[in-house]
Length: 238
Figure 1 (cartoon, one colour):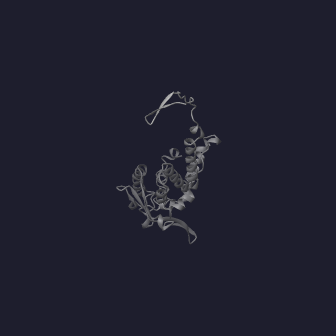
Figure 2 (cartoon, rainbow, N blue to C red):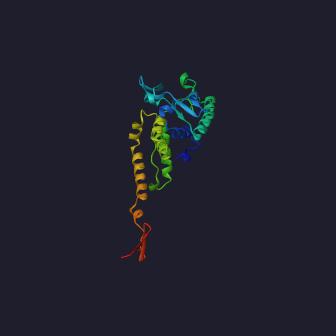
Figure 3 (tube, rainbow, N blue to C red):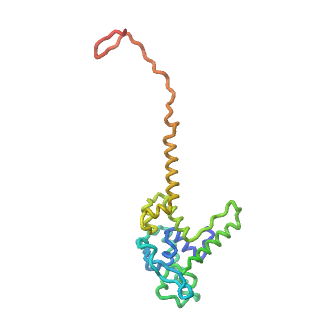
């Protein structure tokens, strides 16, 4: 999917999402000031909303989903390189003749934007992903179709990859901005069950019945002696 999307205007945003696990609103609300490349972290402090106001839809900033969603998220090397590329793209967009001059002042510094330097709608991003999956599947046998994916599923993919890499669930919970680890475990219970089954299989291999089967041995032979020494006393055998 990402190979197909490479070169798309929103490619950077998709790669960033799958490497950080951010929610759409958290990612779309990031400004250049929220990025700290020196310390390799991003500061999530708000969320962007797109809702109907007075018979029309508009973007505005709001609180994160929960207080614990305000957090610092580490940037891996891939995410850092993507941010650098996005900063260059952002500069090009700002200089473009297509750039909207009426963007609200508090949204002019957004990192991820449309070609018109306006906020990105979640529905549009999902449409890009949906159409990409369709185009890929048009070229495949039905048995090889890839599943439809959404922006939020990129977040789930991030969490799954973290778990598969051995990162503790408590740390993953911090990355995702969940209230506590129980929330994370409830959402990703299938991962835990798969992990438990995997460990059970390992136990079965270690403690299989065949491992406890004794190798056949020759019967012990004893030499009959007419005389034995017991406690230094010479005894005659009966």
